[in-house]
Image: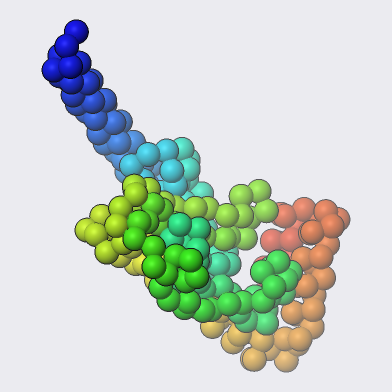
Length: 234
């Protein structure tokens, strides 16, 4: 075969591969939509659907819940269960918000080493002058020992920083970081109000810290921890 024939065959094969990828992405999105639609006690007022087998996210603004979808299996989290949100570009954190209240630190048992609540802004260090960007991710940490971290990808194609593809991915990721950050702050305000208004607030925080230590030591189960935590906060 001459070069022209080989080139034609390569183009045709590439075209069909592209069609297969597009069809698979559409099917994946449609299946994710169905999962969100059929979830009990959840009505997604906003959602981001991964085009691949990655993590999708939905937000119910009325119930203040998020749903994280992995392989078309959804897990619901109330706003009080969200511990941290990080916006990463090629592995470097540019925006970060975590629970910072005294009670919040007790609940996470110092895993995060205290809250951050920081806007780092822009890429830092070696990435500052980088022309090419490959990944934009949102990393969400939740109160779930079995699956504490979810990473949602908003761009995984190498492109120039400032390009249309980069801007679209960054704006969408920043929007979701803002949504999750708002939920974290709402939970923190409520938690701090509990501490300030309760005459036994310090003892409640102490008891919660003790409970978390018992959970970490596997003396009590997650179910027992959640039940006792609810009793104390009420």
